Structures are given as structure tokens and as C-alpha cells.
Length: 78
Image 1 (cartoon, rainbow, N blue to C red):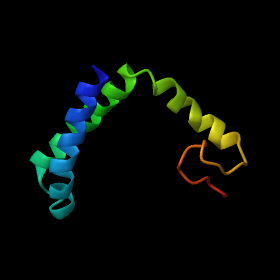
Image 2: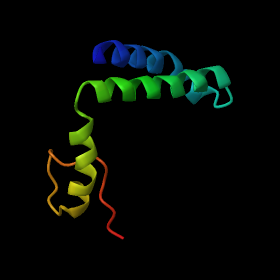
Image 3: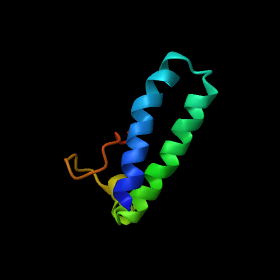
Image 4: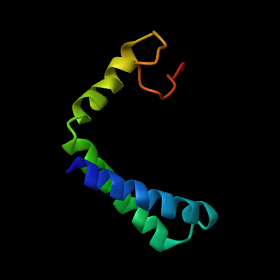
């Protein structure tokens, strides 16, 4: 089931992301991107990987080690 939602979301992103980038006022494309994000989240959750992904944020915030296993967002050095 996760594959169905994820593949649909991917197809919608491939079709609509360039449209939104070209014309940010394209409400139909933006609506499809919003729906694609929701379906991707459903696919992500039903695949059983959401817990590990969610746990990566606080682990990354506490970690000073830069490695491939940490969350890909850069750490705030504030």
C-alpha cells in the first residue's frame, strides 16, 4: 500500500513542481503538490519508517557528529 501512495505522489510532483516553479500563481498545480505531499506522508507512514525519521530530529539536535546517518538538514550553529 505504501508503494501506491508514494508512486502517485512522485508522479504528481514530477508533473506539477515545474509548473509551480514557472508560475507560482498556478493554483491547480499548487493544489496537486499539496495533495502529493499528503499522499507521500501516508505512504511514508504506512511503510513503517515514520518513527525512525521522527526520532532523527532530536538525535541530530543533540549530536555534534557530522555523518551520513544523521538528518541531512544542516545544524544551526547559532
